Structure formats: C-alpha cells, structure tokens
Image (tube, rainbow, N blue to C red; front, side, top):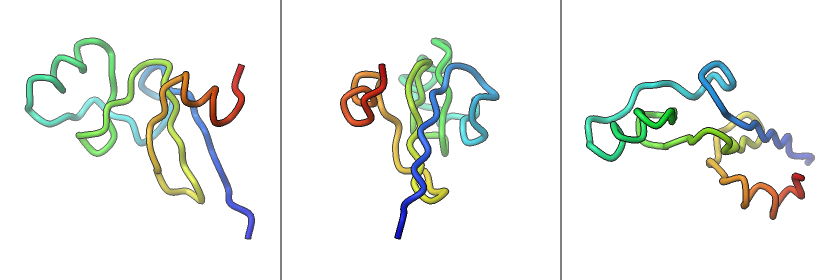
Length: 75
C-alpha cells in the first residue's frame, strides 16, 4: 500500500485548514498566539515556517524546519 504523505509549510492563517487561532487559556499558549503562532486542536502549536505532516489525510505532527530538512531533504 502506498502512503499519501503531505507536508505543508505554515506561515500564516489560511495556509492550512487545520490551523486556527483558537488555543487553551494557559499563559504560554496565549503568549505564542501573540507571536503569530497558530494551533491545531487548541494544544498543538504551529510556528511560522514550521511544517504540518499528514499521512493518508490524518494529521501526524508539526515539524520544525530543521527536522523537515533532515527527514524530507528540503532545501
């Protein structure tokens, strides 16, 4: 079976439908929101420039640019 792997770089709202500005009420998350970060399911922080990894249409995790370069050979 061939896996459908999708890697999307996120920079701003609208780049990916899973990322919203909704977060939990804890301070560190609110602070991240002020830095331009988005959130998946209110808990997963997506920083500008980071990548969203999906396999077969399911969200797996957020990767830093360094990790995405290492795993997927992104220049």
